[in-house]
Structures are given as C-alpha cells and as structure tokens.
Image (cartoon, helix red, strand yellow):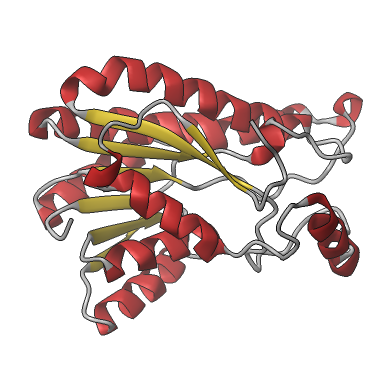
Length: 251
C-alpha cells in the first residue's frame, strides 16, 4: 500500500488522528484535512518525524470550494487520491429532546456530518475512477443500530444517512474498482470535551456495562478496521457496515 494516497478528514485529533497515524505507519501518504490547521500540521509533523509522508490542509467541509481545493492540493502534492476516510463530524451536539432541537443545530449536524462527506466524495471520486481503484470509508456510529437512552435524534439521523450513502455509492462505484464501506464506532474515548454536562465516570461505567468487551474503546481500535478496509485484502468487500464497538450492537 506504500504507493497509495489517503485523505483523512477531521484528522487533527481523536479517531481521525489514529487512522492517519496507522495509515502512515504502513507506508501510505496521508493528507490530514481539518478545519484546525494547527492540529492537522501537528499530526503531520508527528508522521514526518517518524519517517512517513503527510501534509496538513485547512478544510471547511461544509463549503464545496474548500473541499475541491483540498483535493486538488492533495493530487498536486502526492500525484493522486486513492483513499478517502470521511471521519469528520460536528462534535458540538448535546443530547436534546426532539421538540427542543433548534433549526441551526439540525442544519449544522447535516451540513458537517452528511453534506461534508458528500463534498469529499464528489471531489475525490473522479480521481479514483481514472485510476480504476479507490477506497471510501465513512465513519458512522453504532448508535444507528442501538440508540442510547439519551435523546440524540439529530446526531443519529446524520449517521444513519452515511450508511445509506455508503450502500448507494457501493452500488454505483463498484464497476470502477472503488469500494465503499462504513465503520460504526461505539462510545470511543477521544479526549474531546463532550457537551451537555456528561459525568465522565458515570459514562464510562455505562459504556463498560453495555459492551461484551468491558473496556473503554480507544481511537486506535478504529484504525485497524480502517486499514483493513483500505487494503487490497478487502477488495471484494463493499457496501458493508462494520461495527467496532466491543459488542455493544450485533447484527
């Protein structure tokens, strides 16, 4: 895979950072697309210092021109665009009863979590079709299968949309040698501050009790799954949703 080029969105921290680091450790050249350029550059510097190739690119996923420019920069810098990991999400959503969800929160969730992924796919796919090889990996959520007790209809709706997008794209792009799959993380501890006044200790207790494997999920747990789906070993797997949640959800 050392000749491949991967774009990982939201890669300045958390799951995106772990995936970018894993990819780079296996020889992939990585573009870290993040609205926080300082964070992206910091991860890129870690990768480069370890002997890998990486570049940070400031990207606003909700703006198609920004995404188009990011992909063009990746192709210019690395010579191609083979793998796209749609990891970025809006992390500012607090648990909110449906009747209290503000229009701006609903729109922001859709804009970042769904439209942002669409912008990236639309910009990257022509390069994959031209190469007759490509991998798209969408980060959804196991809450789509097993909604939590707290009200998150805005977040879960956007993550369910990514599964529909995954299946539709898999059907459309398979003929071009492009596979499209989704990873459904469980309650990953990313280190990102959570809104809504959630008690960390109580959350960890509930998470452990809900899983078959009773430990806190780490961002690195997603990285191995992403690396597999990006590899030639997964060349006949497409349209699938892989839950990486310690047995929180089954099926």
